Amino acid sequence: MKTSELAQLLLDITETNIKLYDWQRRWLDDTSRFRVMLKSRAVGGSFTIALESITWSLIKPFHTTILLSYSLRQSMELFRKIKEQLSKMKNKRVKFGGENYSLDVVGFESRTEIVFRNGSRIICLPNNPYTIRGYRADHLYIDEAAMFKNDLEIKVAAIPIIAGKSGRLSLISTPKSRRGWFYEAWTSNIYSKHRIHYTDSPHITNEDLEGLRTTLSHLGWMQEMEMVFLEESNSLFLTELIFSCLEDYQYTDFTNIKPSNPLYIGIDLGRYRDSTVIVVLEKACEDYLKIVFIKEFTDVDMTYQQDYITKLIDALPP
Ligand SMILES: Nc1ncnc2c1ncn2[C@@H]1O[C@H](COP(=O)(O)OP(=O)(O)OP(=O)(O)O)[C@@H](O)[C@H]1O
Ligand SMILES: [Mg+2]
Image (cartoon, rainbow, N blue to C red; front, side):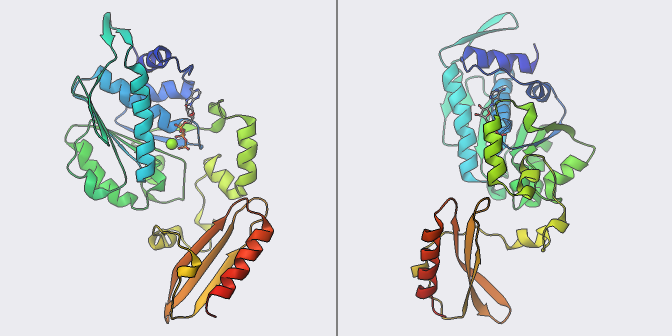
């Protein structure tokens, strides 16, 4: 029985009403050691790797899968998908290879890991090169691989995970810029390539697409839905430079800003497609500007925005 057939059987047993698309079957039956999936948004990438992990864990005792996501939230979301599918299977049985198996397969479960009764494990981890060191896996998945800020560092930490066990590696993502591990993988000839356009996943309705078309900029649409790796020439600053400046910011109220240095406010007003973004910079020293405040308004009334901006300007020292 092919992997895709067992995966479909698991879906049927749990009455999800999902019939695997052709591309999902091709992906599930592709046993190449290195695979890359370039995809439009929402086609079902995470769903497919979650299902694949479960399927392999059942077929192969002591099979270890690690799913790496670019943030803690994404990692928890993926873990939730896997647990949901497993709990739907709990009281069912499946006939496979002439034998009748119980699908009450989970032996132990923690915040990030599921241990199957047959010794297989599925581990979901967020993006942290230090945490992933020391693991060994038969299959390592990198979900939304192009979104990792420190992807090259992750690559260095990830390779030993699969090296010891002759493990497999799968990168899944919508494209970002022409840089980094995901772009390298897509343009190399080591990886088996799968290109999944939104038209390959008919659960994405015309209504969904219309909604996306109006919220995304033209370039955003080309990247997120048409899977175009954008040229550096689309931006004033090199992507490398932008990435090196990125940091996670905690939004605070502007009344908490107490700088002693000059401040600059930049406002990009968005009316229909883009959101409005307000950024306040503090001139910390001669050639160093530090971002002290960022605010984004999506679908917020213009009068409210104008009022907010006036209050912001009044509150901050000139
Ligand atoms: N064969 C299928 N038929 C119908 N619905 C499907 C199928 N495969 C996946 N889906 C549904 O597609 C939706 C999106 O899935 P998922 O979140 O995995 O997509 P994704 O490509 O990872 O999205 P994102 O780009 O946001 O990360 C889910 O609700 C899932 O149930
Ligand atoms: Mg996803």
